[in-house]
Length: 105
Image (cartoon, rainbow, N blue to C red; front, side, top):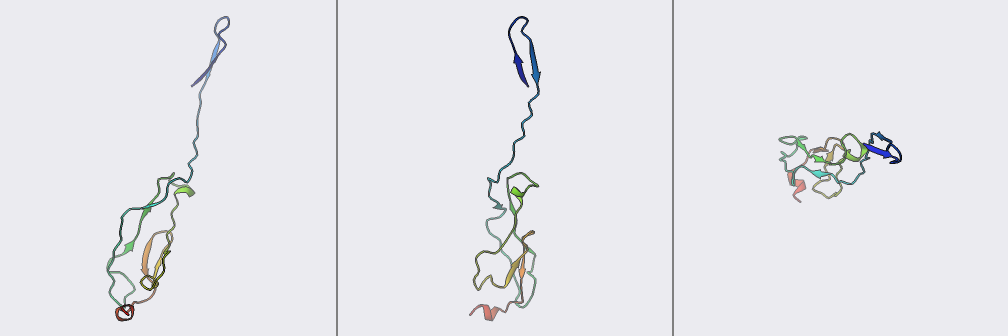
């Protein structure tokens, strides 16, 4: 509440309620829930033995663009070239069956 008064004569005063709206800025980076993710894959199969999903959280205001997280594989080499990641869910899967003997070369 803010008050205004004139202090002259009878000391007239009036009050008004102050409402502050603070806008969130994108000042928090996403952080992965786990420090490492690990999965087991049987060769020549298109699914991990257990589903592999990475998860990150953002401390910016939930439900805004500032907290919206998108996933991608950014370092590509022979060991990850055969995998895809769903940009919204973080679900990782093989793009094609992987032959252990070919990969080991």
